[in-house]
Amino acid sequence: MKRLLLLISIIFLLLQNISFAATEIYSEENKFGLKDSSGEIITKAQYNKLIRLGDNAFIAQKKSKFGIIDTKGEILVPLKYRHTERVLGKYAKLGNYGDFGLYDSTGFAVIPPVYDSIDLLFGGMLLTYKNYKYGVSDFNGKVIFDNIFDDLYMPKPNIMRIEYNGQWYEIEQVSSETLKLPDDVKTVKDNENFKVSNIVVNTGVASGYSVLTFSDYLIKLFSSISPAHEDTIDQLMLSQGAETVSILIKLTWLPRYPFTYARNYYKYVRNPNNGPLAEIRNKLKKKFK
Image 1 (cartoon, rainbow, N blue to C red):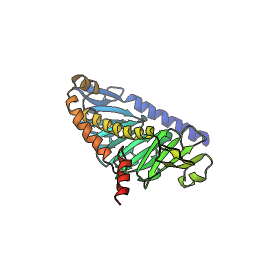
Image 2 (image 1 turned 90 degrees about the horizontal axis):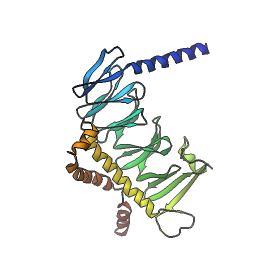
Image 3 (image 1 turned 180 degrees about the horizontal axis):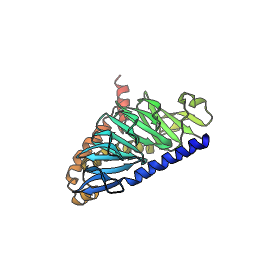
Image 4 (image 1 turned 120 degrees about the vertical axis):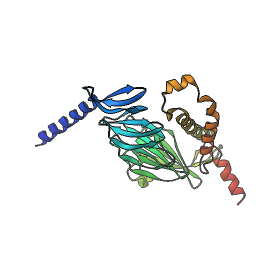
């Protein structure tokens, strides 16, 4: 019986692969559609872009909006999002503003579309951002940390630094080069594989504590620069429905870059809990209390 089930599973996988391989992208008048191996049209050439997603789907763009379709041309995720990014080849990050989610190749929302942003972390984790607060989820949709932290970043693959209520904490996995948090993160303090410590914002010697150095502030500074740059490129180039190479040659987007970038950078810096000015702002608040 077990052998029969195994044989059925193998046949099913082979049929899936054959079905996907038989689906081809074709172009017509600078638009893209799908055909089967016999040349029969599955869906007419109506998309600005079709990007393979996993084994059975495509990220599709119509005008300036993105969604997901399958190999039969059926819409899995409506084409209503202005921003997209393929993650690890088999996930699609889709969103507008405040409704970013992470979808698999079946159209299932692994991470629900309720976040301001979703970004990759080391160790198969995802950094979620909502209402100026950070959290962590995994690719199974499990919430590891709720969105309650003022700041969160990983300077090394095995170290995570978290700011909560003005205090910095560091989690280091001493037994591995990559951090992998336990299923119950509340037990991390008692786990011998992890070292949890407070971080003192001080360039001098701090006995018994780690020190948040100038290099850490550079990481925070560039953590604001990079998302702002990515948002700018996405708005000026990747979400316009034209090929990136063509846009680079024409350079019609270049005059708008400084202004768009400045607006996006300000959006990240004005975060009351993050950014290069956060520490100065917190100190001033304490002085005037």
